[in-house]
Length: 281
Image 1 (spheres, rainbow, N blue to C red):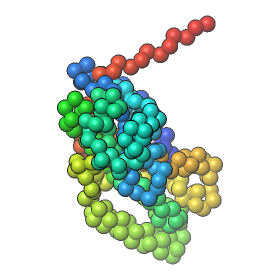
Image 2 (cartoon, rainbow, N blue to C red):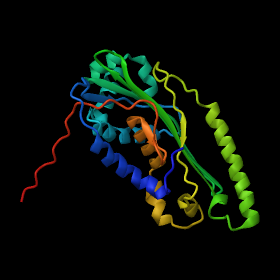
Image 3 (cartoon, rainbow, N blue to C red):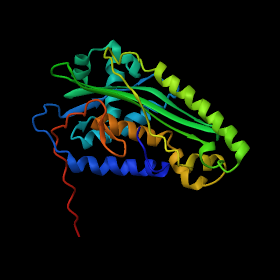
Image 4 (cartoon, rainbow, N blue to C red):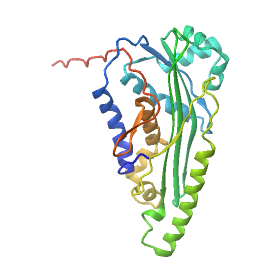
């Protein structure tokens, strides 16, 4: 189980960690033949039609931190639409990796699927869930060189924090929250199997990043602290997306006491980081 001290830390600290710590320990791999990558439209297995676009836009800058040159998504989408009539991730099965590579002119293509993207905010039991799978194919060989998947969820129950001082109501809400958690756990076990991602089977086991001591979402529901969290909540499930992508690419997570492997780390690319421009007076 992944633990964070608060939702506010999860929303901000995750971004800081992913932006700084990754580059501080990673170095380009000049032996890696894959320099350029095209991010293909994501397969959308959830109900939110805009969510795959959000995930894809957050993935691109992260790949650059692993020393890859990422083809502009607008250019990728235009080529796929004009040359193959592909506008959705679900249509990618109509083309082979080799065909996609020849059109896009990159060393690799990355497939992705968004398998869960939902939140339930009731004030009694609040749940946020994101599940993502990724796969990178080498254009020269046509082989899958990396794949990983994860489900990230966070849950809060009002009975555990704000209303714990109200004995009768608090106990009732705890019971409702506990029942919802049981249903959530059963769902995790029943929906582990996912459809193949363009012919490739990829698992996406769930990890819980809940923080039982956090009251940020509950404060919002109860009319407290709205200004503090309004901006963060304006980006749906942003913290869960960022956390999922971080774990997927680096291949491990920190449970607070140790680094636990989670799938395979993405290979470092060979692209040297661009030096910042020299300031002129």
